[in-house]
Image (tube, rainbow, N blue to C red; front, side, top):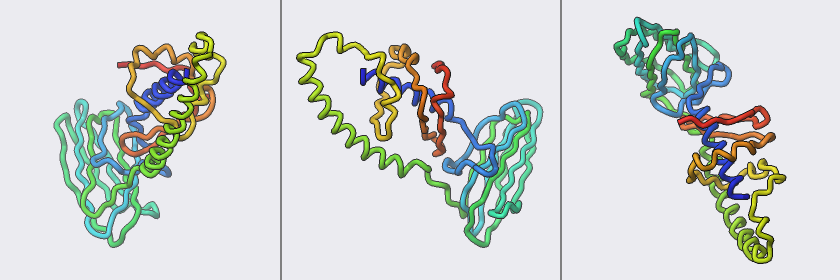
Length: 243
C-alpha cells in the first residue's frame, strides 16, 4: 500500500510539472526571476505580456531580441524598468514570418534590480530574449531547499529501511489479506516534507491510482526555469495524462 501511495504522489508531481512547465508571470508586482538565458516561447494567439526580474549594472547591459510572426507581421514591446518603476530602456521590434534579430544595449551607473516587460500581440510566433553584459541572473529559488530536502530524504530513507525491517518481521504472522491496499487509509499522508520521490515507474500501469487523489494540502513544484508553482489539492477534481 505504501508503495502505491508513493507512486500516486509521483504521478501527481509529474502531471503538475507538465501543467506548470511553461508558466510565466503576467503580474508586474511578482515577476518571474530571469534564471534561464535566453527566455523564449511562442505567442498565445492573443495579446499578452510577461514580466521578468534580474540584476543589472554597473556597466553596459545587452539585450538580444529574436521575434517571428505566425503569419503576416507582428509587433512587440521590450521594456526595462528600474526599482522606482521608471522606464530606462525600450525596443519595439516589428517582424514577419522571417526571424527579426537585434542586439540593443544600455548603460547603468549602479547595480540594481530591474524589471523586464515583454508584450506580444495576437500575431506573435516564436520569440527569444537573451541578457548579456553587466547582468546577474537570479539563482533558482528552490536550490537551497533542494539541498536541504536531499538531506531530509536520506534521513527519511534510513528510517524507512528500519521500519521496513520491522514490518518484514511482523509480516510472517500477518494475514495474507493485509497485503492488500487499505482503502480507508488517507493517501494524503504521504505528502509530507522530505518524502523520497522515485520517478522510475510505468505510468500506464499506475493510472488506476488516480481515483485516490488527496483532497487537502498543497504541492510545491520546481520548474525548469527555476520558478515554483503551488497547487492546492482541494481544487483538483481529476487528472488526465496525455502523451
